[in-house]
Image 1 (spheres, helix red, strand yellow):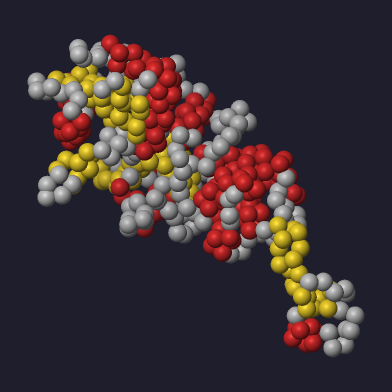
Image 2: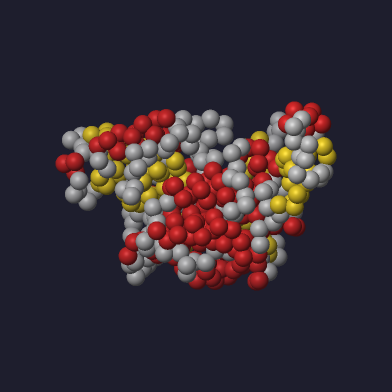
Length: 438
């Protein structure tokens, strides 16, 4: 069974055995730590892929040696030596965490479901043994739930071209092959014919994925489920040319049940990630940018909370540019823009833990404040909100706001990610209370 190291965002990993029991570090055996460092250096970025060094920082600490810190990305890294590093988001729960970080995993999965490119239509949270499974096993289980749903509805068949040397005539005779093969066997016919068969591209890819997952999973529950599902694909040949079969996939009304499965299969078969980061050798990484996950989650929930009360909610608004001459340049894209009866409210999400220290501006960056000020002036509104995730240090903290003195007020609100609906209802109420005099 693969060995698992579980860390939270921003925790430091060391390969120094002297710090094995140190609360400030997570320990990875020296060889596995070297593989992790090699993994980080190997994945340099390009136009399509994220550079690993952007989210995995290697630093040298005196007496400790090299340490690795993973920031703003969450997921699972599978090292080529069998070690797995599971990175969980830092989420605050007022009543504490459950065994196996079950609350964190459940909340994270809810957040992921808000991502447009995350294939999750309707998985059963109750059936996921999140306390006993790492993230990769949970994703495997989600895939298996989708396959089980497909099998329940019935796997689709299509007319597939077959070629065979039959004892009866069917379809179209292949004259040259027939002459070569059947000079002696006059009772046979070498023919090409169409047959209604489940051996179509979608099913071949699903079977190939199941076979691959059967080798990867270390969960007895997932392994048993895969064995049962493979029986339903007994007449299907597994895909051997993924690119060719994926290009043959067409999602329409008759193949709607395959839509989520094909997205999952592309991730699992071709080592694609839901991020722009992808792996190319025996190390695998399934990683999610928490900045984007948090932004999408808050935006999705804000629409549910605000729209019934007459607010028009837009996300990643593209209405304004910082400069308009000599041409429109440097577009402004606030995460959330709320409009109602001429009132405009700008909200920007930041996946960052603030600190209870006003001398350090609570950890709010100067660049973020410049950005908020630009939003205020270009959108012609005094109401700007910065939405940070609630953490233990800032729980119960008095309201924080900043007034520029020239018509801009930036309010800070802490989103309780674990109880987001109640948290955003509270935010909506604060909007009503802070409405400027007309």
